[in-house]
Amino acid sequence: MAGKVHFYSALAVQPNSADALDEIVEQLRSQGFQPGEDAVDLAVVFISAHFTQQTEIIRQAIARLVSPSVMLGSSAEGVIGDEQEIEDLPSISLVAAQLPGVELKPFALQAIDWPCMLLQPNDFAQLLEVPTDTHLFILLADPFSAPIDDVLQAFNLAFSGVPVVGGMSSGALRPNGNMLILDGKVFQEGAVGVALAGNLDIDILVSQGCRPIWRPFVVQAANKNWIYQLERRVPLAWIQDLIPELSEDERGLLQNGLFVGRAVKAGQEFFGQGDFLVRGVTGIDQQNGAIAVADQIQEGEVIQFHLRDAFTATEDLEMMLVPQMFSKPPDGALLFTCNGRGTRLYDHPNGDISVIRKNLGDIHLAGFFCAGEIGPIGDQNFIHGHTASLVLFRSTE
Image (cartoon, rainbow, N blue to C red; front, top):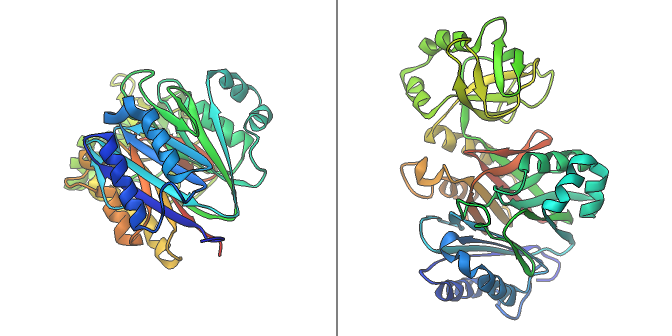
């Protein structure tokens, strides 16, 4: 359909790759796409770790089936399709899009590129050579070789305000075990991605699945990831005094851990959904009352304690999706969710995708369970944990 954005998707759950590819062909045909004849601009594929050794074969087959101008992909612990989240089974998830009026610029970042990213934002921008009107980056990275915090900081500096969404490969527990696909190549380290510019509306939802408790505090003393003083008291003293104020259910949630939300905007007086970057509390010093957080903390910033559970994760995702019901349905989507969600968080399968379908209806979607999710909070891009990062695509017509 010339001139119209069109997404196709397929989810194959089969014990061998040949049968999985046959199932993908059948599903694409059922949507009016003719594999081997029709072509797409962008194909994104996620391949469960069961097929890691066959990644190149699968890449070649997908290329023949949909003839993509750009192909992006990753190995994964589990994959996600339109209706299901597949954990611990051999599976392949694919979304393929015809994007008239959209300019795509693929890129790969390897170890040789890290010094450039760390030294000069302008050099990093020149390295990628993306369109000046780029309004989204999709990024897939290997957790063992890509310094993702530094990579995202390079994007924040070189492309201020442009969102980056994606995830860290989760198909392996060791270096050189993950597979990243970019067009005709398969990489075992670094990062791959694509910049999108032009005729496409994009909405990004980053659901951290947490609820704030108590009130915001100003950090008065901190060093690296340690907080030593919150408003003239040590953090442990505040925690000990405030725990009795929690409900019985909330005290039970402390068994899942205590989290700290960092306010992303300086000088803000009132805080709501999406105003905090959530990080886990990783340690407590019983002698001096300090707490350690999985991030670098600055004196003068505002934090608030948070709790997390399955109910809160569902509620948070639903709250973010409800406003989407007042817009036209998305043409397609990509979902990057934590490998600590799924049935490790919910007491039922398809926890996140069922919420998405409930609020958005049928949608062509592919995703995977990540070893870290990438998405913006405010106008900055971050790596997250226990988060669902969802990008929705709509034509501008």
